[in-house]
Image (cartoon, rainbow, N blue to C red; front, side, top):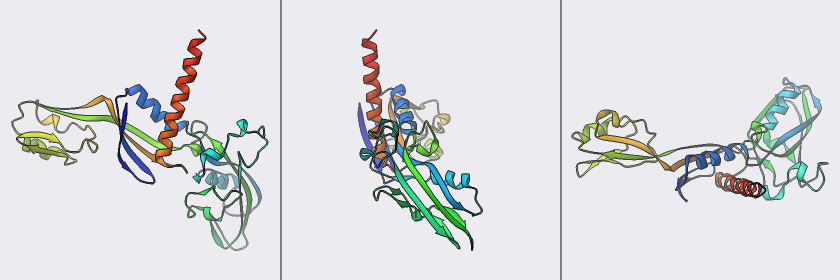
Length: 258
């Protein structure tokens, strides 16, 4: 099994996974979306709120603000040494205390841990008009996307790696022009797929001639992962692989009991 990184930014990563099966690829994708732990606001105590938004609406907005954090420094509340009582190792407290007129942004959230902050200070929360005030305390904890969408680590998708097969193609130039992505070329009289990563298997080329086939390789997969949390995309992929490995080990141990 091999991985080749095609492109990587702070928010997205594209890579090719080779020597795998569709079942493995889908398991990896599902874990990236639903089981990689992230941090999000879970509880909010309102001390004063006479803004145009109800408490529940503001709490919902706060919960969906992605938080940047170090995953190695926090535990799940029910697995922490504090036995679920809440401590700096499993919780982070945010405070907002603003008086209008002003717009309250995510940058106004004062954190009890300087290393845990919203990924962007510009997320709008609520606009306060003259005479209005918002004072609250919010607690962020670790969670998983399968419990609530606010803990979803990433949007992840994959497709089969495209493979172009040709035989006795009489009009390669005409077929080349039919590709909506413009990723086909003619070299030495043969039709060639220049960029398989951009191909979405639309089959527009195959519809032009019986001598052209475009199909997906069931052992190679193009993954596209976009972070929607405070984790980097490569961290999400690595953590997902680690979780999948642990699941396999647990399954192996259970089999030995049979």
